[in-house]
Length: 286
Image (cartoon, rainbow, N blue to C red; front, top):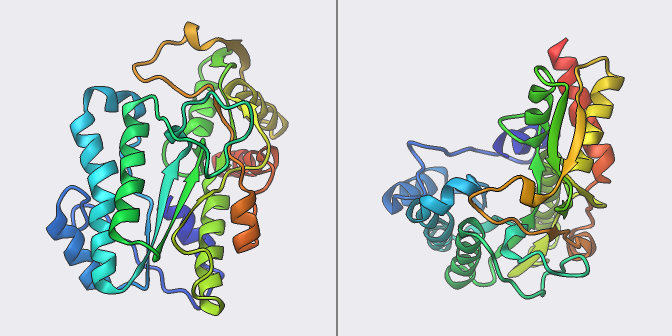
């Protein structure tokens, strides 16, 4: 996420973005959080750090709790001391996946795995420590040209396999980290002219539209094939055929209308955004 923010901030000359990471910044150590905030003296902090190994969190709940639940509260506390605002990223996994319609921000939360539970506690910590000077942004199914993510995993599998089994009965809103970064920066820029807009609220920001993991994988392969890259046939399977340590929400589509109306920004349709990333990766591989 940090690299996506850096890339999308390049054309905003008035923004001075600084990055903090381990070992200097560590969500598990309050002294390091305090020191980093003091050194950088930010106006706005964007917390994109999290323990995101969803399955591993089931057996490592203590670490997940320190990073996802306690960590955001530490940041919020230091932001308050520094007079800074906090943009905190959260997840669709705070929901149980049983909704018949896209989730709005006021929908009942009921996470079904350790990751979701710790992320929800992180939200609560931010609200308690920094009321009125934060926004919480829930997103879903994030991918980018950087790091490890579903898009890159599918393209890597296509290098060695003719077929790939992918779950087809979990539905969500794939989100480009580049689009997500653009939205977060739009909110921050809004505060330059309207300092109080949208503060103290929770928002959803995800790719427009919906699909299954199998549908996303098929789009990735179709675009790769169109670029002359490797591709594999996607074989749709059920969640029951692909058991994992952590349960996943079957339905995690997020309604992003509130973010759009508040900050005048919406992500692209997921098909368009994922095509951009796959084409970019194909060019980089040439």
